[in-house]
Image 1 (cartoon, rainbow, N blue to C red):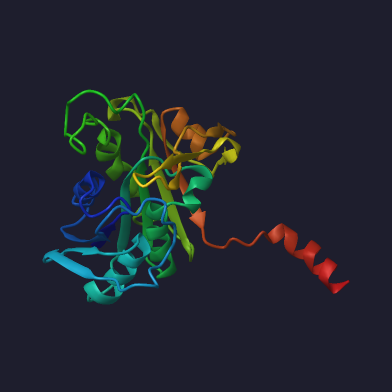
Image 2: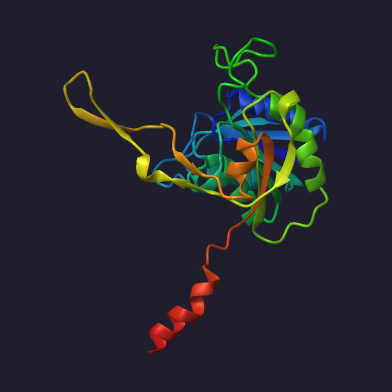
Length: 265
């Protein structure tokens, strides 16, 4: 089985190494093609106003000076001589839950794979006080987040295995989020729907650069969660791995008849 591994945190991100470690449990035909720099929040964007460059690090390892979408497109059109059987995107350092998936480069890389008709899975590791202390396995970004990916490392293969021969409808993908705890504290896996956030409390931080010019920075402060029953937000909050099937058809089908009547009138 050929596996393409990508992400949005960048080629040198620790989560990419974690995902390669997970992928290696399923295949030895693993290819890496990821953004050369962090592209968090890039969504499903394409680089159209400047050239995209492809850098080769090893026989099956490449970086792209662009977005996660660019990386998947370059892998499918320039790097690989035949399509992969599976695309894995992540493991993202941070959650991709609820409507945050619309901003997510991690999910968008999997979306690009789904558009190409390839089985695609996005994986994200939620972080918090329960998995960002201690010094057990590895040092992340030179800091103290040694346990950050513990749940993803040990539960990742268990979450992926049932999906390898599952039926995926066209233009669908699966989004997986690991809870912010050690693997030993994970309570299990839940297949759940997408939840929603309350963005009314979002923030924009204003500052001044050394020349006295104003700038603005979108704050990543805590956002109110709507923990509806059966959602990814609830599952992760309860210590479970959230497994959510996503579709690319954004049509609100229940509105079609009503709108059609209005325009026909």
